[in-house]
Image (cartoon, one colour):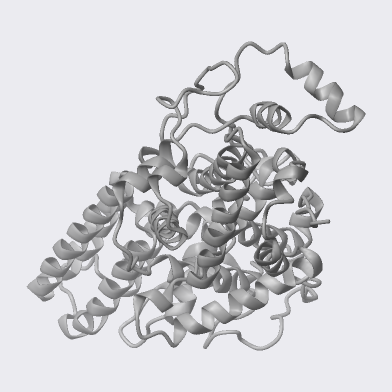
Length: 479
C-alpha cells in the first residue's frame, strides 16, 4: 500500500526550539557583558544609543550599528522624531547655527553626515514618506552647503534616488494579485472560467522558475522595518499576540501569496474528474517542488507540499495509489517540522553558503520559508524584553534581530536570472481557487466519503447550489 502524505498541524509550525532561553538580564546600572560592536554596549539608554548614531568630524558609527539601531529604534521612537533628534544633535555639536562656520571642521563632518543620510534613505526609504522628514534633511544639509557646494549636489542626488525608490515601492504587490472575486458554478467550473495549469505550463522546471520570479518580486517590496512593526501591539493593554499594523502591507501580501499558492495546488489536484489525471497533476507538482528545492526557493516548495498535504487532497487514496511517491517523501523529509524544522534549517544553511560563494545569480537565490522566518523573529521578540529593569534598551536582543533580518535583506536583493513568462505568472496570480468547502466538495465527488465524519460533511455540503473560489487571508494560517 502506498503511504499517504501527512498533514502538518498548526503546532508543527510554531515550535521555537532553536531559539533557546533569553540572555540573563544585567543588574541595575550594569552594562551587560562586553561591547557587541566597536563601542556598542549590549544595553544602554535610548539617548546614549541616539548619541552613538550621530557622526562627528572624527567619528562614524559602524554600518552594523546603523542598521541595527535604525531597525529597532522604531519600537521606542518614531523615525521622523529620531531624524529630528539626530539633525538637532548635528547642528548643536557642530555649531551649525552660528553665523560663521568652522569650514575646516565642517568639511570633515559633512561627508560623514551625508553618508549616514544615504545609508538611512537607502535601507529604510519608507521612513521618509512624510514631507516633514525631508525638510529635516534639507535643513541640516543646507547649513553645511555654504562650506562646499558639492554637499548640495550630493543631497539632490540622494533625494532623487529616494523618490525613485519610493515610487517603485509604491507599486506594491497588491497590484500583482487578482481581485479574487468569488466565481460561482455548479459542480465543476466551465473551461472558460478555469483552465488547468498543465495546459499553461507542462514543464516543472519552467514553473519552478516562474514561481521564483513571483517570490523575488514580492520579496523586493518588503522593507526590513516591517519585521519589527508586525509585532508591535496597537494597544499596549491588548494580548501579546502579534498583529499586522497598517505599515506591514507588503509582508501581509506575501503571506497571502503563500496561502494562495497552497490553495492553487490543492485546487489543481482536486479539479480533474479522473484519478489518472489527478495523479498526473500530483506528480507534476512533486517535480515542481523538487526543482524549487534545487533552485533554493523554499517558500514555494513549502507551499506546494502544504497544498498536497491538505485533507481534501491527502484523503484521495485511490489517486495517491497511482502516484510514484518516493520523490515526494524525500521532499517531505526535507521540510519535516520535527526538531523545529531541523532538516530544512540545514538545507537553508547550505543554500546560504552557496549564495555567499556564488559566481552567478542562479546560485545566489535563497528564498526562505517565510512563515518560519516570521515565527523565529516573533519568538525572539517574545523571549527577550525590549528594555531591561534599569530602563536600558536591550541592544543585544536587537543585534540578533538585525542579524536575521539582515540575511533576509541580502537574499531579497538577488536579481532573478530567469526570463519571465507573463502568461504563467498571470495564471499564478489570477486563476480561481477553491475555498476549503469547495475543495472538500470536489474531493468527495472524485472519491466518495469513507468514514462517518466524511459522510456527515458531504451531506452538509451537497445542498450547496454554488461553490465559491478564494480563501481569505488569516494571520492564524501562519501563526
